[in-house]
Amino acid sequence: MKVLVCVDDTDNLETIGTGKLSQIMADIIEDKQWGSCSAVSRHQLFVHDDIPYTSHNSAMCFGIDFTGELAGLIDFGAGFLEERSAKGSDPGFCVVPLDNGLDRDALMDFGRRAKCEVLSKALAYDLAKDLGVHLSEHGGTGDGVVGAIAGIGLRLSGNDGRFRGWAHFGHTGTLTTVATLCTEGYIDGVKTVDGELLAPDTGIWLAADKVKTMFTNNQRVVMVTRTHGDQGADKARWRTLTKPEIRQY
Image 1 (cartoon, rainbow, N blue to C red):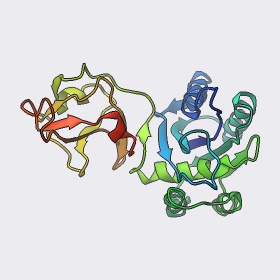
Image 2 (image 1 turned 90 degrees about the vertical axis):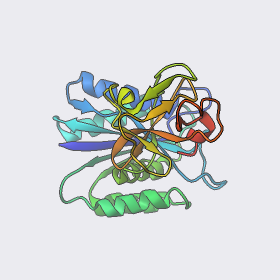
Image 3 (image 1 turned 60 degrees about the vertical axis):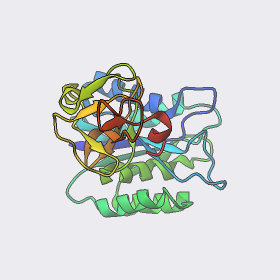
Image 4 (image 1 turned 180 degrees about the horizontal axis):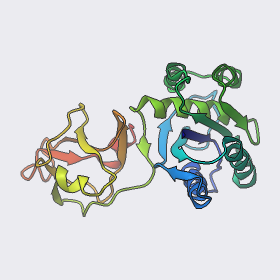
């Protein structure tokens, strides 16, 4: 069974972030031999004065090729969040089996709305009830349920967010190729910000020591842009994104 798990609002400014906590949860699930977990993706939600958040208002989602009992996974996740979430946080937890009866469009629509609208807990719970999926709150106001179910929809869309952690392909100024980047094993391809998938022999200039991977067309990709007068423009037409450019995703 393929399952998506999403958590939101587990931290405060003094504790580890929701991304790190989600990774710990995924690692424990694998240690329990309940299945293999995919990389954790970060999904940016609406930033608005009416929405409480710690720093950026983002939800964290990962997939599981799940071999255990769903009730056990839900009990584990609930207990994990109640034990480890930070004081003053408002954790939400969503678990969605990707079976054939799932209304994926409804989830994706909710996720898209959560990027530009202020949505309520009531709407989140109504959607979960309609779909028959697990959604629960584990502290504080529980407003994290909105981001938790929204993050599922955004991950399902296959075209939102970036993956947790930084990739290190070489020092700033290094010239590499698409084929070399894809030998890392977890990179599916290199795409331009305009959506063009680049050929394996295309030269890529590393604009920074650290690179984020993005989720687009259900692939984990390195995003690049034209060098346009950048240092290194004489070496390659394309360069990786800088940290400020990455924040747009």
